[in-house]
Image (cartoon, rainbow, N blue to C red; front, side, top):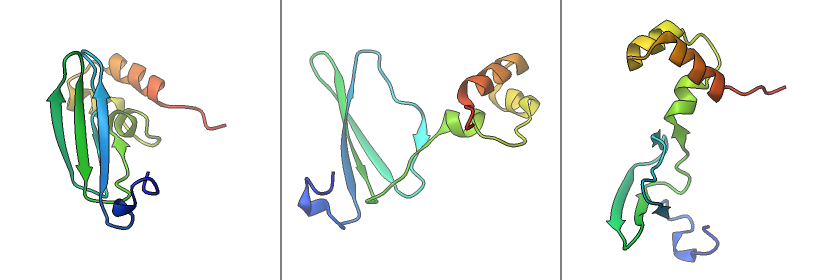
Length: 102
């Protein structure tokens, strides 16, 4: 992207446009290496947004992947309590977000 917009190269910012279908959305996420500002505009049929990030490489962590897909000692009882979910729902979510790396 930065090669296409020379003024952004090494300036330490990123710009993005997002298009949303009706009833569409974006997974909850965070950018660990940037601050983000998002402006959402309504079109005739769809919504779209412009995002500005205070880093050339903001990174992204999708919350569901980080919580339910991480390997390690994530006790389902703790996650069930934190998210007010049944333990079986948590186990189901963990099985959907974890993938076999073999």
